[in-house]
Length: 250
Image 1: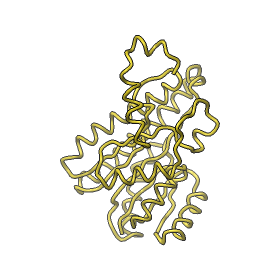
Image 2: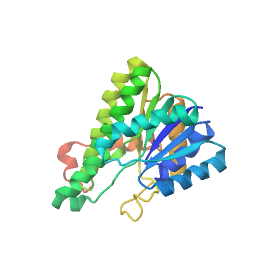
Image 3: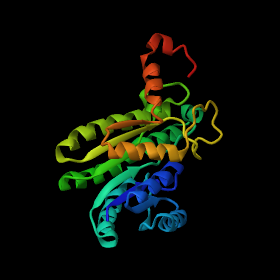
Image 4: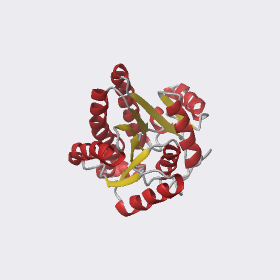
């Protein structure tokens, strides 16, 4: 059985993508902080899709635990699913509070560590294994917010922008070994992270995003904006000259 790890599996997008992977015949290792919720999700996926799913606790901010966590996932893929680990989905994040981050460095630190540092840590471990095997894929959720720094969310955007650049370099490195790296850049998605936020427009459902991501994985894409029209929106945003952009309230 093909096996994939889903990091941050209780998020709305991750749940939807786990369903898409289950439809494709993947066994799933569902990882996150809430083990009880993960076990409920694993049971639900088993009933809905007839797939084998297991829950495993994962703390993104405890980077020291990441090497052991990755080894346990690799061992579980062989022991429980009868095959090597094929893919990794990283779908967790922390939007944070931009205004608070401007006053409180601890909030700024949490945004950057969750959305960049912890991601680099755990992906570093999985990538090394896949590179050695010469196969596999990484599917990582960045954001359109990382395409240009805006006053309304530049702390989150900076972390996601750094993640996108990291993934670009990682993709370049791993291409020679046959390992694929997909960078996912969602726009606004109807999830708990964005609930109640002002200025939301063109909001997509988690299910629509998951279908777009699954399509990109099958087509072996490098970068995908979901929904696709965000590619053109962000191209326009990036094209605005800095002297004009800094006068805009975005």
